[in-house]
Image (cartoon, rainbow, N blue to C red; front, side, top):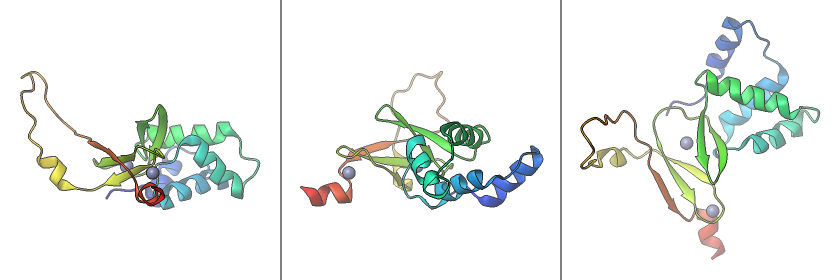
Length: 141
Ligand SMILES: [Zn+2]
Ligand SMILES: [Zn+2]
């Protein structure tokens, strides 16, 4: 898995002549440790636990900056943007009940034969979304 790495963010900050502010650091650390695909609001809540004065603009700007530099990916699910610190090609499992997005690292999915695509369409990447119930929601049933 290729995940968001601190040293990559640090060298990015240095090349671009930016400052590694405590807020930026906390956002990066949160994205590195979360197993979920947080929305900007979830990142905001987590950062505010440590730095209660962090503005929404700071969180959004930092997330956009990370995205533009290929450090995180966006996953659109349920009409919301989720941020994915796992940037290599992978698949997702989405819970139909709570909307949680989980990673699937299953090479078997790559073996799916794509049938009858028009000749002019050349596939470069494939992201599969499987849907069902997450572990927590299965227990609640
Ligand atoms: Zn669920
Ligand atoms: Zn993911």
